Image (cartoon, rainbow, N blue to C red; front, side, top):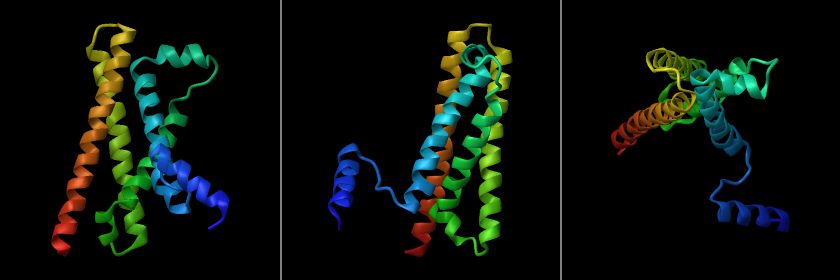
Length: 155
């Protein structure tokens, strides 16, 4: 191992990050970045005035949605229970569908919430971020429980 590679591993370990490998970039770092986009998407849907003030001539909704879809698709694809899907095409299709249901379902929840609460930008932002965190955690727990079932079945 070169000194640069050793330094990278040491820095990653110190920061609690995974080393920069193709696998980690695709199935860890891109999904982590997509959760940042997901949080920004929640704020954008619940309180669009923030995005309008930051980027008055651009609608960032599609940009944030595409980044969320990409990362969550890769995350779904990398889950252990998905390794049981024989066909790589089916595995990719299932991952895309799971990602779309999660992402578009979240947008729908936020749109309904926004129409149901009084017009208060701070409350809308907090509700968007907190509901997004709950939806992401529930989805993670669901996928994790499926993974545990697969591991238990193997043993």
